[in-house]
Image 1: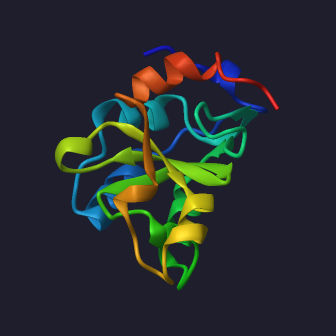
Image 2 (image 1 turned 180 degrees about the vertical axis):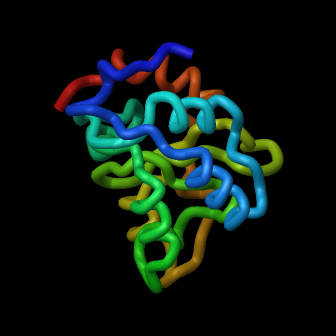
Length: 153
């Protein structure tokens, strides 16, 4: 897989093997192989902001989450994270939502946009719903190959 460091606004920070295996243990599932390889070899950090296609310019990505950021959001008592069904893991921060990688079942390995604007309009409290999940790419590899074609902010 290409490293795609050109995506980052600064130097990405690779995850340690311990970070990855600890997260997988917490989740009770292995991360999709291409996402796992990417965070181990390329890493996470701020990226050049881009508009997520199909969001009417309301969705903008800005950071591939570090392990610490994922832990912080998972431990928060309330927040946007709770709208995302548990078979997804939010992995890219954005305005208006998050990009999430599928962990289980028919969404495993796929990348979806969790539309937090839609969640605010349609969901009550801390419930989660598939209705806010919009397919973006068939895999992390497809996402990384396509993202540089997305409109810069």
